[in-house]
Length: 496
Image 1 (cartoon, rainbow, N blue to C red):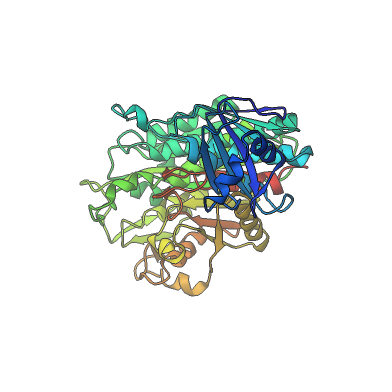
Image 2: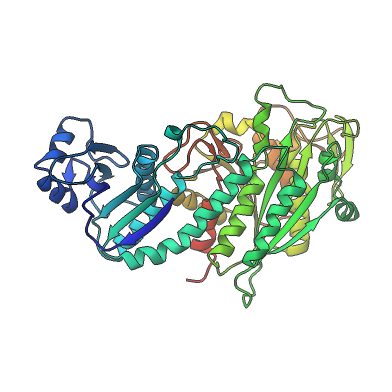
């Protein structure tokens, strides 16, 4: 779907979109359209539960007094000045949700906010509309025409249309990165395996990202026994991908580092998962997709920051060469791990990736994302990612970025008592403890591999896939983390 910006003034035909504030207060454009339609808008509002609350939508088909085939009222919430960019994104998404399969091909939006504030708000409205328009229909060969989206273009008419276009240029790069990440997560496991996912990372070279891929030979030489143990039962060779974006080459600051768990399919290994729902485990690489998407977003908008992205890519399969419960592996750090549960594999992948990252790059901080534990879903549902953070400033910035992007972050405890739950009788630690506090114990396991670098672990098990969708995300892959971390970099680590 294409989004464009134009000067104020709605065309006579097509789908016309106007705003209504909470309390049924019409904007200037809505008032003018109400006059032309001889009160059709006020009559429709009075005959419905539409009150102008944020994200509310009401369609009026073929009103008299205009050649428009449809008028759409979009709730703007409280008076102007109180609405945040993320709210405008939700409004744009709600509009696309209303019109996507309605039969309308084009929509024109009267955006009545003036000045730079209005231009920026319009850009965020456009971002929300773009994000909601995503579809993964690669394998749909017999879809009925009436089930396919019809909406192809949205024109936003706003006074500061040049400001809107300029601001949206960066946001559109982020949206494209979100789509890229959603595609990766949505792809079938027989298509998206470690090498093919590494090949997708290589495409970022076209945007100026330096991409290195380490295979089994290179990782064996580095001593990455924890990561390699997870993938040894698969016919697909494990990979470690290092992506570097040098957006501020003159800076003497240490790079920012982001890491992702990339288990392209997770059977659980010898500790086999139940068959019901196992098909969902194609998205156990959601953390790596978020990091890959982030690197694409930063490169696409030419972010003025130096950033490292590292993803550990494995497939956890139960063949005759798979690691067994009770095996002991030696990590790159030299610490030994008793693998008492082969389905607690993501922390093994990240253990070596974290150690490699801090050892090679000496980063300013490390943030990892992983669909790590079912326990975090029990604790937080599908509303927040669990954030385990060793640095208060970094935690606050992540939480603020979560609020700014509607990608919620909730801080969770890190305590040594949880680490004691991972003690092993025969090795330095075991990879799985008792179920109580499972997310916290997993986080403390990984903390042993950070070597005191400021670190945040985001457990996104409840956020990587949406069974229902929301204002800016259709049902399916969410690409949670791309917008969150792009905002973090933009707001706090790029020169103003």
